[in-house]
Amino acid sequence: MVTTVNTKKLAVKEIVGLFESFKTSFVGLRGYTNDKGEVADVVINVGIKHNTTLKGDLEKRLPKIKASQYLLFAEKYGDNVALQAFAEKQLSMEKSLAGTNVHANGQIDAYLHVGNGIKIHIETGDIFIYGYVVSKKVLVKGVYPVVKSRPLTLCKKDIDKGLKAGKYRQYKISFDKLVEVVTGGRVVQLGLAA
Image: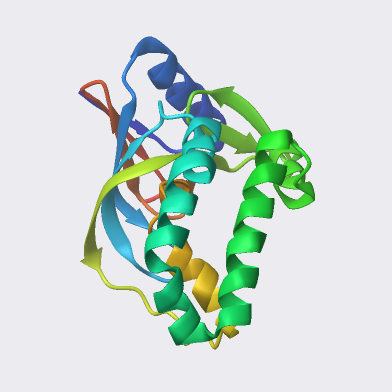
């Protein structure tokens, strides 16, 4: 069954109802277009709690990465940069778990959480579906600018590749483009193009 929704108010009601009526953790976004023009089909698990994954990263995965790959990072970025990157990653995770990460808290306060894996931005009313990315199939490549990051940032990104928390994403449902939200065997088409 496919339901088409053309207004934000109806879309919010439809999506919240969809998430409440099905006890599934997996949500598919078909034809999702990001702000860089990339079009992809994405499957996310909205049932995996970010704090649980973050705790596992802090207690198990980060120490394992440091023990097994530190010398590679030190060789690539320098010993001081590698030490700082691991220390900052650890501190950031600890602050997030303790609820003292100012940036994370500011993000939390900006949204109304209406269900598992769905939130609404308080100021704009935009819908966001978020969770752990299970799979992503790019249908149309986007145009991404070349970013010249500092070695510290690049080292942190390399560390993130081994962490599970880095696979959490949120997807903004933009009503000027068509996207299908699929869960529990139901499909809801959102967007003015529908």
